Length: 227
Image 1 (spheres, rainbow, N blue to C red):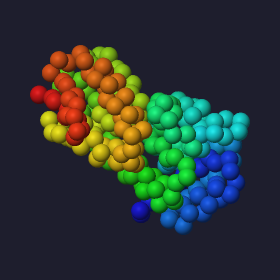
Image 2: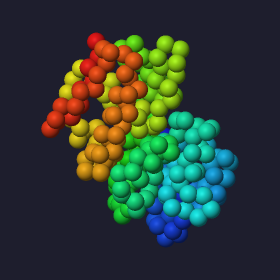
Image 3: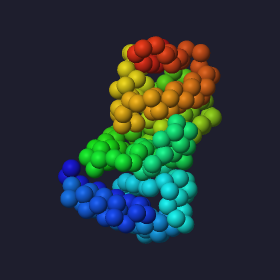
């Protein structure tokens, strides 16, 4: 990691926040730590960050609300949520609010570092900033826009990431566990249910082009069929 990435960490538990800050700084990141959502918002407005790591349950302003505020001004910055919640609906809500990743407590420091690096590398990928042809649609991963003729549909971060993975492997079978490991961090039951919800949403958004299909290959994964 040649560039020294700057991270905003919002964690209301002082001891955990200190551990996370010191651990990330020892791995080459520059970290500003806030202990509540309002302080984190003020810090975000005062500095340029490359990545946000937000605890969900915080005083004054929760992580989901903070992410929504950030997304009004920045659609690109990666956001990782830290939470003790594990229900499928909680995971989906986190992605709907603008999160790119979701780490369940307790977690290892290495897991956070690996996921942070993956998001930062994905953001710097030139493909992230280009329009991609998808049948009769146009798709921009960075702007998270799916365009049909003159109509633009804004996708959530997770919808955009799932669609990008399918496009990269279009007309090929894609192992669902590979997508889950790459975008969710592991292929457990809850994450699998969450991904199925996003696949269903994408099918509806792509239904104007009858030549496009996302097939569910039972026991293996998905196949984006595109002529």
